[in-house]
Each structure stands twice: as C-alpha cells, then as structure tokens.
Amino acid sequence: MSEASTARRPAPFDWVLLFAILVLTAGGAVMVYSASAITATRNLHDEFYFLERQAVAFAIGVALMIVALRAGYRRLIPLAYPLLGLTLALLLLVLVPGLGRVAGGARRWIPLGVVNFQPAELAKVALVLYLARSLARQRDRVKLFSIGFLPHVLVTGLLVVLCLLERDMGTGVIMVMVLFTMLFAAGARISYLIGGVLLAIPIGWRLIAGTPYRMERWLAYLDPWGHREGAGFQLVESLLGIGNGGWIGQGLGQGKGKLFYLPAAHTDFIAAVIAEEVGLLGIGVLILLYTLVIWRGLRAALHAGEPFGAYAALGLTTLIGGQALLNLAVVFGLLPTKGLTLPFVSYGGSSLMTLLAASGVLLSISGDRGGFLRQGVQAVRVAPPAGAEAT
Image (tube, rainbow, N blue to C red; front, side, top):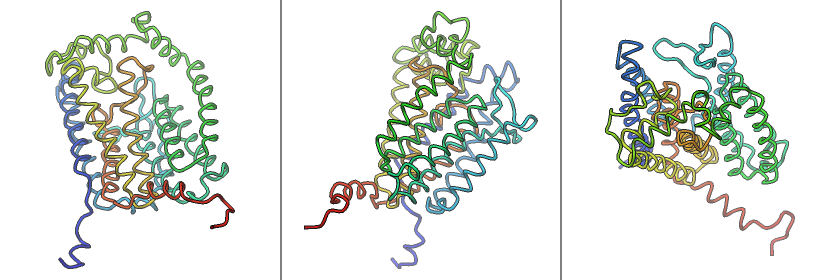
C-alpha cells in the first residue's frame, strides 16, 4: 500500500466504546418513549412529542460526533479557549429576561425552534477542553499555585457561579469533580487539592443551608417519608417504583410511576422507570454499559500520545461517569435530589447533543497509541531529585 493511501486512511477508533454509547442512546430512546408517551398524550395530544425531539437531538448529535471523529481531536486544541469564551457568553445571555426560557422556576434554556438549548451542558464540555489545553501547556509548571492551580480554579469557579445563578447546582458539582480529577492527573500538589476540597465543603453547605428549596431537598433526603407530601415526594415515588420492579421488572411499558406519580419520569428520574419496568437486572445492564464507557475512556486517556488528548479523554470520561454516578445515586436515594440527566439515556436535547459531540472527541482520542500518561508516570519515578548530579 502506498504512503499516500495510508495517509488518507481514517484514524482508528474504539469500537467497544462506540457500541456502548450507541446502545445507551438507543435504549434511552425506548425508555424516553415509554416514560413520556402517556404524559405527552394527555398534555400535548401527541404521544411521540418527546421521542421526536429526542430523535432530532440524536441526529444532530451523531452528525457532530462524526465531524469530531473525522476532524481529529488535535484540531480542537486552538478552539478550546474560543469555545470557553462562547460558552461564557451563552451562560450570561440565558440569564437575560426575554432571551432565557424559564421552566420549573429556573432560567436555563435558549429557545432554538424545535429544541431548547441549555448552555450549561456545553459548559461542561468546554471546561474539559479548556483544562486539557491549559494543563497541557503548563504541565511543567502545574505544581505552582499561581500557574497550575489558581487560574484553573478561578475559571471553573466562574462557570459554577453562572450555573448557580441558573439554579443549577448539579452541573456545578460535576464541574468541580472534573476540575479536581484533571488537576490530580496533571500532577498538581496534593496539598492544594486537599485544601481546595476542605474549602469547597463549607461553601457547598452554605449554598444548601442558605437556599430554602435546597435545604428542603436535604431534609427530604435525610427523611423522605417524613416529607412525602413535599420535597420528598419525587424520591419516595422513585423508591416505590424501584421496589415495585423487583429483579426482572413489571415489563416494558407496564410501569406505574410514570402515570403522573413520578415527576420528571423521562428526564432526571428515568432510571426509576427503567428499574420498575425491567428490574434491577436492567439497571445492572445499564451500569455495565457505563462501566464499559468508563473503562474504554480511561484506556483512551492512557493510550493518548499527546498531553491534550490524555487530559481531554480523562475529563470527558469523568464527566460521563461522574454524572451517571450522581444521577443513579439520587434515584436510589443515596444523594439529595439534583437536576442532572442520565447521560445518553434521559430526555434532553442539549445533553444528548453535547455528549454525542464529546463522544466523537473521545473516539478520536481512542485511536492514539502513544501512552503519554504512562510515560509521564515512568519519568516521574525514575527522575533524580532536582539539583542532584548523575552518577
């Protein structure tokens, strides 16, 4: 084979990772229809209303995934900072009365015709790409507080504050999780990371205790049955649905919680519908698919030949895995209620489009075979102390 034909060959990618993502998305579409058809028929006179919009978001997301995969992740390096700037502008625009759409008491969406776009979903991916580029550029100085730690915390903090103004604490939690994971992998000082966590705990508690609806959710988390008629209603109905499903479920489409008992059945609490209709066996398959995504995503990070690719793969994997973990923990009553979708599965056009686009980036990175992170670990282990003379 000639060199020219070899150069034109598309870069390889991880088929196992693609399989897991597509199965999650396809299964999610089935469950979105199952969870929303009755509500859509009663309120909108169209049982396919939510499924059709999810299909539009899926088509756009797959197109973006293909573009990202074919373009290659390296072309995103110069776009990381402009994308962050665009995201900041959108987060500000959504707060402007008349531009941002209000739903459930929160102003988070910008109407775009058939879909409503939520800038906070783009912000999570933009943050990963910004951190990946910045940490890659500063990797020799990442242990310095003023260069490797503080600027990244400030940028992430700005995004988190804007999300909090949209009453979206869940996205802020995911962003902080991504930040500390990527800083740890890049080699930031453990003392800075521990100090940051210790500082974040009282700030997080102040945000909860100082906001009535968040405090109600916290109290409902501690005693959901005692708050069944109030803030604990959603969690109680979720737990009842999970219990009703048992090991093998009531059958696809046979769940009772979605019959106007469980709020947000097709969005934040879709896992409760899955548990009721296909049982804990179905939840086990769901967790297995997310485990595949996390495993292959971490594998892509370890095999990436460049620091940007390694950090981006790690950040995107943390984003997907962390959000899935938090969503399932909320549904099973292990964490207070938050407005986080189940990645690739829940109804939500912005979430699905941005995650599929991010998956294209992750798939592009999965074709690398350089092993930057492993080389970095070996280099750290064998490097002599600073100032030591070679013997």
